Length: 424
Image 1 (cartoon, one colour):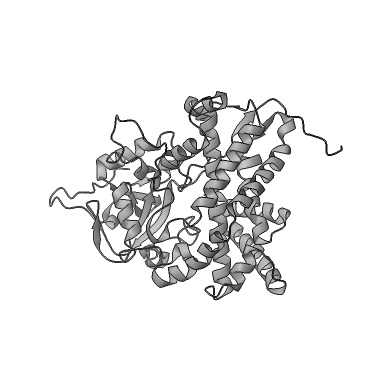
Image 2 (tube, helix red, strand yellow):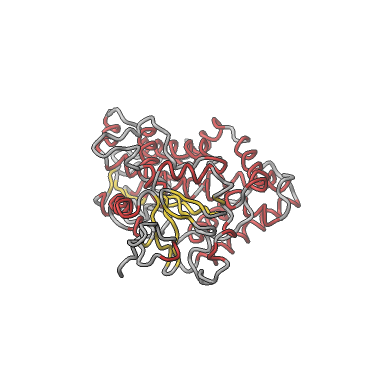
């Protein structure tokens, strides 16, 4: 298919999104071997804001520029989080079976709301994060990681995604929500499927809501010292829909993104000589690797979404009221205007990346998320001496999704580690 030029050849003006055809699919930025090549082509053709296709016939703007993303994130009076402002929800262009709906439909939580309502719904999350004792949490996470590793250390091989990275974050917070371990494991699978690029996403989300309803009902009947009780009793959450969707947001932030970051950091530590050398006394360690992951391959490659509340201009493009804007976080972190081509990257110690967002909706769980990742990676490298990736680094599979490049598997081998007996 031939794409429509974004600039009208006769008038020299930029065409609005609705007039453009033959657009690059958003999934091309996550499922190709070199996303930066795709980003650069889009920059060359369109500038720091490029038209893309989310699904056939469903266009959006992909914001590639660092400063342009900051503009969008900081101007909630122009760019809203509430998907009800997306014209596709009202003009019939979004099919009922669209796989975009799980990530681009209205929900009753802080991520998908704006203004005073956002601040009301954000306060319970901030309050929950403030309750965390970081020292106690680090000890608990280290003990959990040790237990999980113990389940496979004797085999001499494992998948550090399925067996470890995808397990640790959710189990680390499941107890705080009052969930039994087996329920936590079921919730992990349902959460993963609810955001997968697949037809069962809606069914998975319904199962997540059922799990939440059960634990909320239990805590109403018998309050406990856990996060579910804290949310149930918080005056800012006015009904079950707001409680359930706030639980959903909190768990996704604590689980899916954290699991991806653990996997990406482990992959970097195991495959990049600058970091692999750390295992043999090199100078770059886990915090350095984590900084680089958050710059180069953050857990959310493309973050949905903002919706224009009025006609405006961004990066030279004519943004119309109702247009959707996808935040290209990986692209913006590599914006040539802040990382000039040919110059060394300066990720180490530099935390000005956009992986946590910015503005009113900046991630409220940055500190606990970083703590979980660092502890999980350090514990794995300590307890699995001699661990090595079992496949070439460029053969690590990726979970199909337009939103991220999460490793689907990280097979490793290591000398089997004998487990200490409980008998003394």
